[in-house]
Image 1: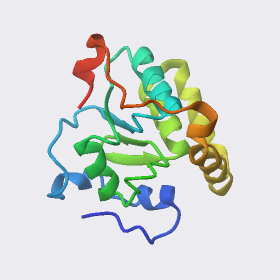
Image 2 (image 1 turned 120 degrees about the vertical axis):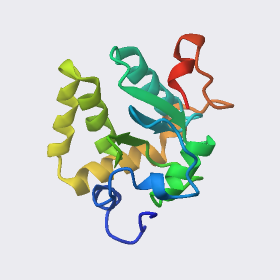
Image 3 (image 1 turned 30 degrees about the vertical axis):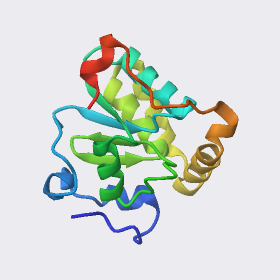
Image 4 (image 1 turned 90 degrees about the horizontal axis):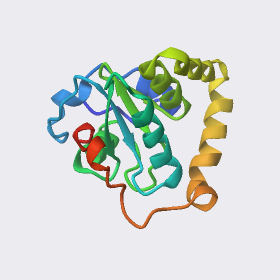
Length: 163
């Protein structure tokens, strides 16, 4: 069942989504979901930087990645009621649960373990403030950080991690 886009803030809506709800959505292609999944804007310099950050610190192979422009990324964005053109948030799925906006950083930190769990401190920010800050950066990310001409192509050592 697709998450309805009219039930409050994005983070709140996603917190209400049933784990692994995408499995029953025929529009979402099957993909290996035994690991956490980071869906990111593959042309955004900031977003690909975050993806590289996760990959270089993920020593336990806890994450797989896909770009929001990929078939799986597009289908997941639609499934959760996210704009597939503006791509104004990353999406992280951990144990089938979706996270967006600042929650993606906190969830990724928890998934990476060790000292990176400190990123979960972002969850103490009041949601309206955290969403406002995230939205300001997301809407201006290309202007502030740049844009690649095409989606990130992972180097050979990371290719097996991409869907």
